[in-house]
Structures are given as structure tokens and as C-alpha cells.
Length: 237
View 1: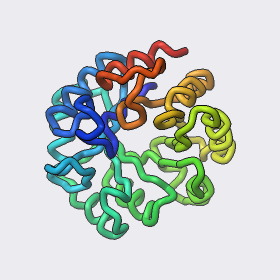
View 2 (view 1 turned 45 degrees about the vertical axis):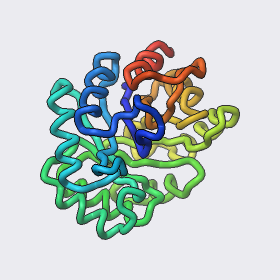
View 3 (view 1 turned 120 degrees about the horizontal axis):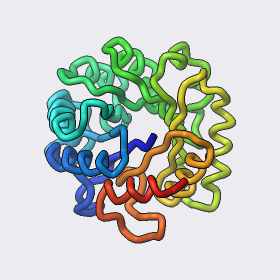
């Protein structure tokens, strides 16, 4: 499975290819799914282009993307602490959503992760447990009573350099062990994006690619779109 991560915290300063409006996200998702993605991860944006968990932005984003892709494609959003630093307020945001994503990522090393995950579970939203390399996320996740109930684990290699990417990925996977039997999606970012994606493909794990994780194709050229990144990922076996 290849998930497309449409934008992440990036914005217009990162290039015209990064979609920030609901319409642009929908168009990008449509093209990425046509290119081979089967799942979508997106960061809803405020009018000024910043990540937000507001119910209005989440609803507008989900409505636009759902109209653009087949019903079989699952759509998820972030709950990253940078979008709402106060843990209690983050939970309130989740409980206020009027349109629900199929899943939402929760970074397990962040303060309030357990409470955010519980609020999502209460609302019937699948939880993607984000476990970042270089954090205590794996340890905290494995000790969590919610761990067996998550949709999947996002094993996220945050080292930006390609040289240590595979070693970091293997260390992270080792720390997760059997991940309470939950499916694992392995991915990297920036310089580690393609080395980690290649490893995921070799290991038979789900992975993801998109302008959130990298702005460049495997050969170093700037990517023109999320669809171009997905096609490049689909060619890697």
C-alpha cells in the first residue's frame, strides 16, 4: 500500500506544487490516486496557510477530497501538536469535528497523545500511531492500553540524511517489535525518504510518499506533483 501525504506542514513558500486550499488538495489527491496511491494523508490549512485542526477547515478539506477520489480510498488528517500546542484544546478540537476523517495520525511522543487517541477512538476514527525515530514514542506506544486498538503504526524515520536512513529505520522497527500485531507503515522524510521507501518495499511493508515527505524525485529533480512522486514510488520494487 502506498499512502500519499499531500502537503504536511509545508506551504506556498515550498513551491507551487504543494496544495494548500481544499480544491488544490482535492485535485492533487485525485491525480495521486490515479497514479497508484490507495490512501490519503493531509494537513488541513487555515486561510493563512498554517496547519489547523479547526472543524471548519477539516470539514472543507474532507468534503473536497471525498468528492474527488473513489469511496474506497481512506482519508486521514494530522493531529500534530504544532497545529494545536495545548493538549486539552487538541482533544476539544477533535470532539468538535463535524466531518470525520477515516483516520488521523497521533504522534505518540507528544504531550496528550493518549488523550487525543482516546478521543478519536470514541468518535470511531481510526488512529495512525506516529512513532518517530529518536523519541520515546515506541516505548510509550508499547506500554499504552490503546496500542492494540490503533489502525496502524506509522514508523517515521526523521533523520534527514540518506546515509543513516536504513540503519535508523531498522532500529525503529526493532524497537517496535510486533507492534501489538498492528500493521506498520514505514516512511522517511527529506533525505531519508527514498532510502526508507526502498527498504519498506523490500520488507513488504506499507509506505508513503508525497510532498510532505520530500520535494524531490529519486534522481534529485524537483517533483512537479504528488502524482509524480507516487508514480516514482510505484516503480520501486
